[in-house]
Structures are given as structure tokens and as C-alpha cells.
Length: 143
Image (cartoon, rainbow, N blue to C red; front, side):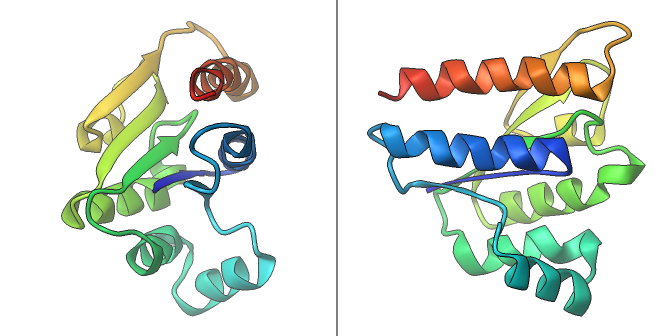
């Protein structure tokens, strides 16, 4: 199973990857962060945003699964929840991949494989567009 997470627009890209996977040989084996509003709000309310994704992964992931983290900030202060989830995934023996900006980021040090995009002066929305194109190429290769 491959789990895909992100914050904001990156979370929407994660859901897009999961949806695209249904048209491939990986149908049903790619899941995005819980898009169920009840589960998501329960995790944030009961555990806090910082640990919500890591707690979700503890329940649904198994050794040998993969986590793909999408982040335009790379896990800087605003995305510490992604770093927490990636560290938890590593402790649970999941492979960790990441789509990140080029600058040094906390997530780059956690990921087994990081695709770091150099786009000098690019804003997060531009990075998300580039990430979306990369993810489309990946999911098209799954067919």
C-alpha cells in the first residue's frame, strides 16, 4: 500500500494521486490522508494536528508499505506534522519518498528518496503545479 500525504494544496494533490491510481494496476492500493472529515477532525481534536497524520499511519500502515510526502515548504515550521508522520513511517519500516522544494528541508533528511525541485523564486502554487505534472507522469506510468 502507498500512502500519500500533504498539507493544503499538497493534500489535494495526494487525493488526486489516489484517485488516478484507480485507473491503473495499483487500483485501491494508493490512499491519501484521511479525506473523511469525521476521521480527520477527530484526529486533530483528540491528538492535535502535529501528530494526526502519524497516528493515522500507525493504524492503517503495515511494514513494507510506502509513504509519499508532498510539501512545497519541505517540512519547515508550518509543516512539522509531515516530518512527524515521515519519522513515524521510518520507525514502522515504511519506505519514505518526498516531493520537495530544492532548499534544505527537514523532510529531505527523513526521506529515503526525495525529488527536490529547483524553481528559483517559485511560489507554493507554482511548485504545486510542477508537482502535479510529476505525479501525473508517475501515475500514467502505472497503467
